[in-house]
Length: 391
Image (cartoon, rainbow, N blue to C red; front, side, top):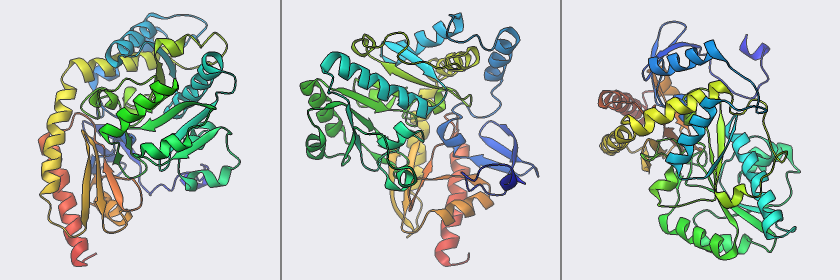
């Protein structure tokens, strides 16, 4: 039925979820699954959070959408919290992570042409990166497998090696206006940015008067143990893209900019009919309050430490490397990760792929020790079974 209705963009398994509670999902047969995917790092508060549901329901009863031709108070409240907790100066709210990246591209080019010179339009991205599926974001994405069907792509984008400042310097030209980087290449295998490298990039951008864009679509909103990963790095970007966990399951995104970038953006240069609607703003307001003010960041740090300890106690020849920070965890195997993901699914644990031999653990930020224990028990059993050849 599914394949007869939808365009075949996702190779989905024959699995239908009908409800969720806490960190668990339930399919249409009633089977229970421990969720360490969280809608791909989206469902930061887990499932059926009563306060979150009530906030959205209450807003639905009042008003859902008026467009950006008019102001609304919940939008102001959400933007104030984003500004306060992120340390950035201005906010543009949209509908997804890839839209946030598209806005960042446009803002960087506007700034480059208005403030640096008309020839300043090129953006440097990293190889192995992932920035989204729209044409501009796809062009930034440094993986040929995603780009190949859609060439030619957006002009004015160059790629350099990740964590290699020499490669970046070689990629920059007289036309460069910005550099965009992830602080962890999640789709690229959970590869973390080196601290010194990121600060060398910041210094280089300052010297050349070009912008530094940090893509926090997957790494942000508490997942690192900080609201945004750049705060973990003691870094101040010029533009930040954020989405996924910011809506707690409600589809939205945002692009945050410094005051100097904002001065180049004028009415009519960008917009979004649905961006920052009253429901999206309500979601941002509620999620930020929970994450920053009600102990979730502390929980992420505690559960991260516990999860890494438990993962490192697993004895298996199939384990090659465990990396990441916060609740952004990559487990690299000596085999293709697909079979382990499939076997964990059968036993009621949801984990997600991150490159050929790596799977990621990105659970809701509200997990507890017993949830970690259960996940480790299932994973250990699957690895042991597969290692013995009893599959």
